[in-house]
Length: 162
Image 1 (tube, one colour):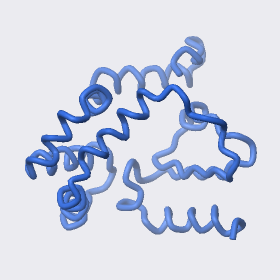
Image 2: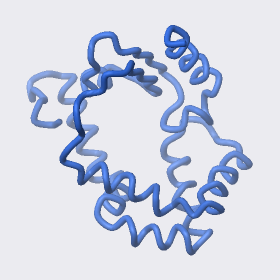
Image 3: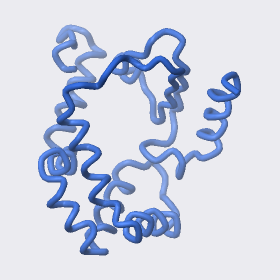
């Protein structure tokens, strides 16, 4: 993706700065899951403290509003009681190591982009006719941060399809 950026374009410079920051400061979880998902998976299914820390850190980093403690613990509990930390880690691993993504989708596509700014649309090439909604608020966990907005956008996307 970075090689598509024009070093003289101000928007591309901003995108590159954010990519560099992510690479150097925020990509540790991704590096672990992309290279050793089973190792972190063992920890996530063996230690409730690690499971809580793994998810709570992401809530702290990837939300703009405080998330209710009961909602956080419910989310962590779902991972803990289903032992799905391993499968979640493997999802990122499989994405990182896939070479055949198949044919482009033929079904309607939709994006609800939270914490959107001018960089997002440039980075995600959406085919013509794609449902695209940008929200300036909420972040990585819109179902927890902006559930009404997410539900309304899902209704808007699916209503012409029913």
